[in-house]
Image (cartoon, rainbow, N blue to C red):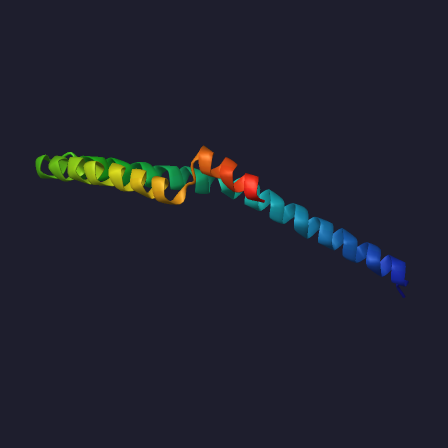
Length: 93
């Protein structure tokens, strides 16, 4: 017959074994998963870059950039308070 603390000790041993084996298995898989993700990302980026630099798409790329930069600038001007406004609002609080 097992006593309560023996039973708990056995469960702790089983838990420790399960945790360590799970950690070992996951740590074996992580480099493989990372390598696969890097390879997939590299392939996607390469194909995207090749697609972008086809002759027709270069014009679209420059058009996209020339529209995006002013939009980002205006967004920052509208939604990011300037240093002067920050000081002024801090004065009133």
